[in-house]
Length: 73
Image: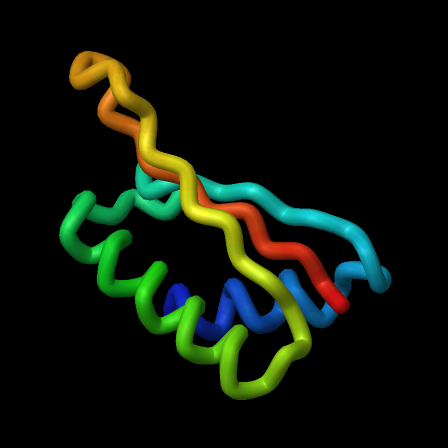
């Protein structure tokens, strides 16, 4: 199953107001790929309005984790 489909399926299962947070590491993605995915999700959020997206980048370089939180509307 591809990652956009996984995300879409997970979002469909959320109730209104529920959140789902995931990271690049959880999806086994490089940071560059995860950044591209975040941009894609941001555009989808703006176009469809079905969810909002919050991107988090940790300031500690040794953590190396970027995460995204999706909130279903």
